[in-house]
Image (cartoon, one colour):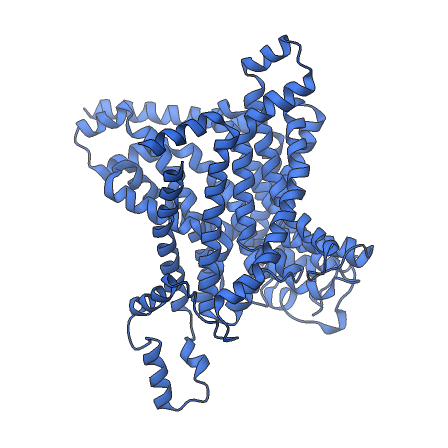
Length: 297
Length: 312
């Protein structure tokens, strides 16, 4: 018996790796996805290591009126803002906010959404109906309005921003997981698992969800992209990461007062948001093609 | 058919109730209740009186029931800030938002449908690649940033358009492009993939074999059959626009519903926020229903289905 379990595990591990390798092989051929991955890696490294390079208090948030509103130059690569802060340094630091808010928000949505979606798809019936109708209600309110309302109620700070953006992403995860579970549920291996008496949650988490992964992975990547836009939108409206933190959306908003003559203040943060979002979108598109070759154009 | 419409309208009721409760409940958590705003100079006794009148001495469910009683009679509540009925304020702002949503849709359709068709017909060509890259860029660009760029370039720079406000035809162009770009990205992709699905069908080969010109094959045979997903996405995107393009309206100081909501949020004007969001949700549901009904006119097969359902 232990021997059999070992071989089963071994073969499963083997198959998993080869499948991953296959997906990676296909993803590698997509130039956009590779470029996107490279950008994300670069941003992640920046976000993680920036503390070793820059001093937050003196180089990122401290005001220096003598150097205010300086156009891009060798000394200040992207110029300085109205408080004399170096925009390039602030942008580098800001990568941390955008990435962490995007990723944490989607992680929240993933956790809540897939669990609810899996239960709705697996059990159906009253539970499923209640979950799906509640999802409909959530989804009926436009995402940004929903996020605005949540942040208003809970107060504008980074954690609440993550929660608000995360909550608005939940419906999509519920729906896609439920749809995937519905197709997997009737497969034979699920029936087999039930026949040997495994508990229902165990079946859901060890058999059903892993087999629903591909659409979920794609949605995760694309959702991070939209979460980053949503988070910077809220910050732009003054409902996100509070000042003086160098969040890209709020930097952009601060530049609004200096559009005439100092447009670089709005130019660079917007570019940073766009490149980051673009990277996630390219990886998401690439993953979709790689995970499901049938969909490839 | 009518039965189907009525069913759909009835199905909206639980959603509206759910949405109103959700928004009401969340906004109720917001710090600073109505009383503390209204009763700035009031004595303690008067404050108590007010708290009682508005149900603040009881649970949120009680306050919600008060609100719903009004809502059923068509009363969306009264704005704390201006003292005018929320419905009046909403009604006043709606035309501007509608105008902008339509303008954005016109921009998006003019670009995305030809581009999507071209990308599909010349799949793999430089047109296709360029179209898809543009769509990806449009999708990745935060629209408040695009709006600011347009202001910098065309309003402050060239002076062709006003930089804000609703002052006639010229003033709508930049905000419409701003919102339309996001729509364009999504609609180009949908048009392309829908056309590609259709383009390899047998009936197109048949049409060509009959000697129908290529232009007509694409226009009459392929495009018509690819319409359903395109209509769907046009409808969803349009309804998103009706939600009040909060960001674009902020950037262009556009006097629409989005501005109303964000201004009320900033002033903690709970009734206005709640009322406007409920109205917006209702409007979106109605638009989505209309889109659904439009399918029937585009596709006789769907019409037949509705008719059958209606009888049953």
